[in-house]
Length: 167
Image 1: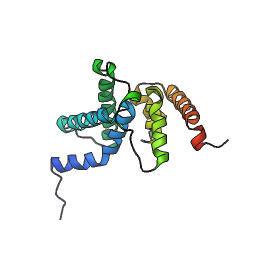
Image 2: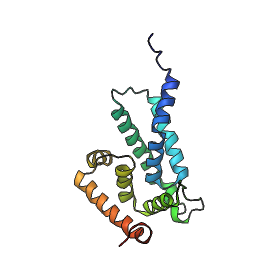
Image 3: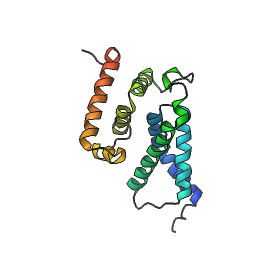
């Protein structure tokens, strides 16, 4: 007996469950704020649900979600309102908590990096994208991505020197 095709709602739910961590994590890395990441997350999946696109391959769907997350994150971070609010380092909301203090410390160090270094590191290590894929997504040359990864690693090494790296 053939399987019943998924209803649009069931299909959307399975896509949401498959990609929720990726979209939210990238939005958080890009915006630096849980509230902004929540907004971006909702906007991305609302756009996905409303667009009704059909993808031939999962890799295309993943790329579309990453690109859309990047675009919505840019809107949030570039808004005039955001430029007038208190900087992230002075905000009252609690830092993101992970399962271990080491993970929380690493995220805190990563969050303190400039956007141009933080985003490529996040995409490379958390989303396991290649430098070519990151370059395409961020509209950079692959060499520029490799340089940002190298500089970002060096900044993290300095920030975490006493915590994780032994000389």
